[in-house]
Length: 231
Image (cartoon, rainbow, N blue to C red; front, side, top):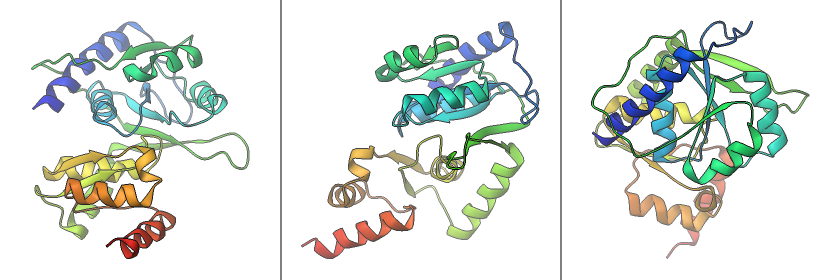
């Protein structure tokens, strides 16, 4: 499908970069190269995530809504080989990561993409509420173990439709992206503007035929309130 071909093309570009740019080993994450992804919940974000894994790297999610200082702080700590970004965020990527190789997500497709093994799947940074954000290294084995539990517990199947509210910097994206992909279901990204408005979110869930939705308790409270107010 398009998802496979577009992620394959981006993965090839990443491999070319990884093969010519030495990755700086990190005492926390080891030798697995890191690739930062600057993208909102979107098809392009999923493509960048899959391309990073196919290239044998670990993704580091950057939330476009973070303050610029936090994005730069995470980049300094993660020391990524590349920063992959959507076209709409090209200017922000250039302004915040002058010293990092930047790759824009394009519409290019390929039938021949790499598949390189790596120990780590991604590095997730804490909120930093007690000081500097800390990177938590998450292995492929941990992601697969979690997905095995999710798929069995919720009986996820190919007819399921997941909503993606989480940014690639938040752990919730692991469930919202990989569960439907592994089960043959579909991902339906939602913008933060819609996610923050209960009535708009409810309308989105109904229009898209969402079958599985997960969120923090505070969002559930507002969403249930919208259900009660709906005609």
